[in-house]
Length: 419
Image 1 (cartoon, rainbow, N blue to C red):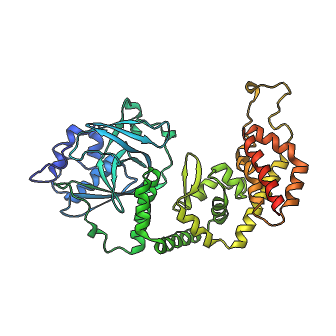
Image 2: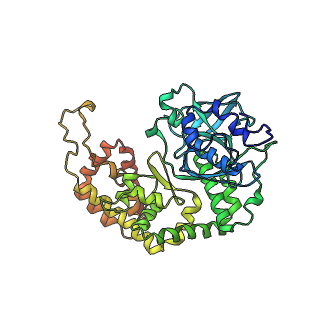
Image 3: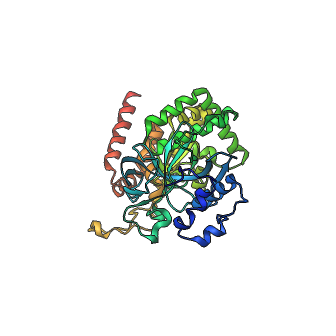
């Protein structure tokens, strides 16, 4: 609330108020925040940020600058849709994230288009404002209305309801008066690739916040050629780690007709049961993003880029491999998957754990779409339907997706007649 006020010795902005503002004076003392005028201002500010946000963030300060540069991984909880006095309403990313939040009075007023995020290791979410290649800190700490001290560790959110900490945030917390934007000359000496990486990270966070117009403006600022160079750099970094199966995962995400769940991705990509697709997705983090346990390409430009990475023959082979895995998986399912009796009702269905259809949902619905990407596909389709049609119908019924099966049959007939 008072960080923008003046002090003869700027260190008193911390020392004079810390005793009143900290709920844990012992921890503040252990963090090295007790009055000590031998410590430099930049070191004190760095300790203060680490005390508030935890030591999992990286903090950089400079002499005679009331400004901290903060980097860390985090998640987006939602974008601000309405702000009045100390009450903030957001459009949450998941249904369990609260819609209304409380922010302390501050010299920086919250406004629509700001973002509520949570950094890994932080005790509470914060409100930030997008800039070209970074975010300004507007409110260092906010809590959900109605939250209690028992759940204050995530600002009132349930820990298991939070999105994954998959985005790299670059934040600037400035104490200068009047409030000034981060001086861009701080980064003018950095390489274009690094600058574009920061803009790209900002665009990904804006996408996740559903601020699509601002996100597209960032992609436009990078340019198509520079984006391709940036993606080359990302792929080279993946190759250096010598991680297996990353090409299989990227090809599956590229060829899929809809975003895949983590389980579906492992099956469609042909991963062995002991290979965890989530780890591979994390390593491909600037090309793939995860939301609600669903994996998708991070941006349309990624699809265009991957189209140049994979040779047309690889793409054709990929479609055929997905088709073969799909029909093999369906054909191996036992008849009467859920052991239902003839007179069963919905209350009699007890899904086994693990459910054999969970990793195969996409394959049951889209095997024909991948098959029709091939030439001379008709005989393969006929053989599958002749031997396994009823088993496939059972899968469609269990997935409550019978309409999709009917549409697929129509598409097969139409394409066969054209051929």
